Length: 116
Length: 114
Image (tube, rainbow over all chains, first blue to last red):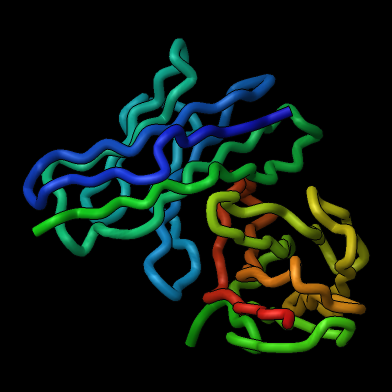
């Protein structure tokens, strides 16, 4: 079975400061990992993914995430936060071993609030 | 135009009524999904379909049914709506090839059951 945990319901950061949104996962095999962002009254938008290769993945809007296999983590990071980054962020994992379905399981979401 | 379109965007209905949420896509993807979003619970999978003749139950399928009318259309029905089905519903698609699990979402359908 696959699962993902986002331990923080909310993250507050001042504009210009670095931000981190945490995600840990559990899968049987090698994970496919994703981050999505949801702005108010909108659907989820894909930010970035890790499939294989370099542990540091770069995505949209200046976001990046680091895959850490030993800690089973995939934290989302940005060096300098913007007020416009305020949104709901979802981590997701899929396990290619699970019959090849690749259907992702989502975390509960973390609300990021960037203060001016 | 949006690649994944959901209708209606908002719907208020009463307990016991039948409701259909519709989803259409222009991405040419074979795989389509219905998710439900509740505050603090994230997204939970209701049903998914890998092609027109394939329908599969997800994590929370009780009280819901689906129809895959064509490659581009996937509808979700609540035969007799109840208040705890009040939620934000998302349709999503993904490619069969290459298959990396990346999903493309519609804008959501907010359903309120009174």
